[in-house]
Amino acid sequence: MLTEQRKAYLAEWRQRNREKVRAAQKKYYDANRNECVARVVACKKAKPEMYKKLQAKWTSENKDQVLEKRRAYYAKNSATETCILLLSKIHLDVLVNFLA
Image (cartoon, rainbow, N blue to C red; front, side, top):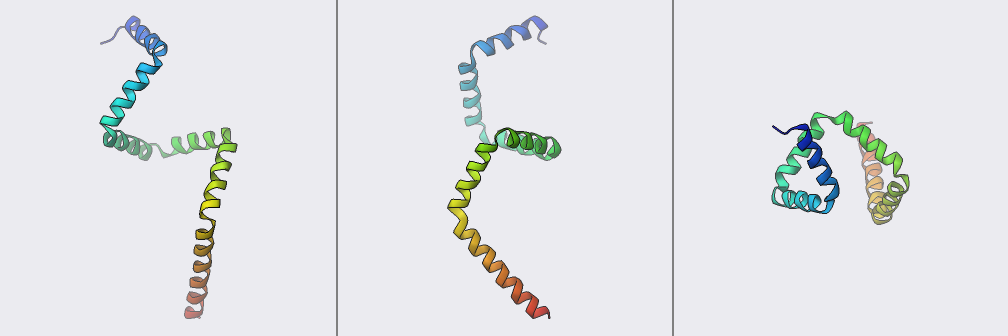
């Protein structure tokens, strides 16, 4: 069991050596990618409301970045989305005519 003094020292060390800490975290993540992803998925399933709030908070704080990504996505996929909408409208018209 760690003493409070040891915990404080380790916290201070981690702050002073952010590069070493991040390198160790990245090395662990790269070696155990599937486990890490599974833990994140399980946590998100267990706490969906918390993650919705975090996502909404991040989105409101980074509106410019969100809009930029949406614009880029739409510019790349606008033709595909237009075709999908057109086809779904045609299918809907055929279905309505069939049921009538």
